[in-house]
Amino acid sequence: MDPTSPQVACFEAGIKFGSLYHQFAGTPVSPDSADSLARAMEEAIENQPHCVAVTVSVREEPLRAAIDESGADYTELTGRFLDVSMTIDYEGCVVETSMAMEDGYPLMQVDSVVNPSQ
Amino acid sequence: MDPTSPQVACFEAGIKFGSLYHQFAGTPVSPDSADSLARAMEEAIENQPHCVAVTVSVREEPLRAAIDESGADYTELTGRFLDVSMTIDYEGCVVETSMAMEDGYPLMQVDSVVNPSQ
Amino acid sequence: MDPTSPQVACFEAGIKFGSLYHQFAGTPVSPDSADSLARAMEEAIENQPHCVAVTVSVREEPLRAAIDESGADYTELTGRFLDVSMTIDYEGCVVETSMAMEDGYPLMQVDSVVNPSQ
Amino acid sequence: MDPTSPQVACFEAGIKFGSLYHQFAGTPVSPDSADSLARAMEEAIENQPHCVAVTVSVREEPLRAAIDESGADYTELTGRFLDVSMTIDYEGCVVETSMAMEDGYPLMQVDSVVNPSQ
Image (cartoon, rainbow over all chains, first blue to last red; front, side, top):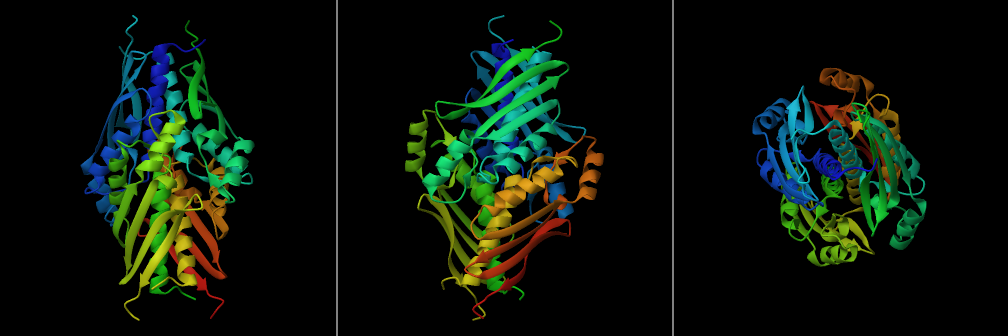
């Protein structure tokens, strides 16, 4: 069957999450540079179609722990340093999504879907 | 409302598309190296959860045209050189997706959603 | 032969250029988001060893032209939208490098090498 | 001072290393997909100017250990899973480079520089 609008809204939300993650994973990051990276991630992904809002914060505690363990002054961005939430609006269907750590892996998930036609 | 299984299946499909595109966009590519890149893209994304199959082919004609125009021996991978299709299976909901050029932009879309509970 | 300090300084400079380019190429970018991306690129690469300073600016004219041509509201970051300069200091050898367009390709080059032992 | 040919050769070698690392870091990888990724990395970077040969191998032991620890079937590519060597030839100056783990960080280094004019 053809996809419904809420299904396409969820597809669009997934695109943004995959884009954000794989565009920026591996970026050199330190506590001092975390804020500029988070802002760039938000504004870059908000350019994409149907993307209403992106909020990125870098979790300072695991970032500092990884840097201390490595002995260097920075590390590479990966999912365990990130909290992300996004709002997608596709033809009035609003999808809220977020990324959180679960079992040591960054889990991207759909938090809610609002379909105005129901 | 909480998402349905078909909606999560579409979200998962979107993640794979965004991942594939933004992990590999910018890779140096030529007609000789296109096949190894396409295979690596397929196998890399098939590692991700709920991803049954990925097919990537590099469109040789626009690739050669871009290289000829640039005067170099290679160019950077971007969406207009790619044909991609993917099958995602989330809890029995099977989503078929593809990427094709439309108005000069690579458009990622959901082709069909099969929900076994209906 | 083993590399000299100026040669290692140039190698380090090259690493930073390749990192900057291939980490961020493909990022969705528009005139409104160009500044935050440029700041993030600078601060991310300045984390890397021996990197004294990075200056990135997004060239607004070709960026606007590419967006106008595409019909979308944004495009993907690539070298023709970037002006970059960097200063690397390896054991007192200071290397100045820059990226500029030449024949339609972004050319990364070493502008000067100062070796204090000479 | 203007750079010498051996210095430019080292700069070019650095570009290739930074490109390889930041293009592919973060790619989903498993023991089954490691070979196709390694081949794609080699052939992609060999497209770049002055790059004679690239050899990439994925270190299976740390890759399996990381996957076992995570509980997933794959992980993200990072430097500790990679052995890389490259040969660069710029105007007859041949530079051999490699990447190896040192103190838990992937260290990129120049192994030798051969300058035919000396």
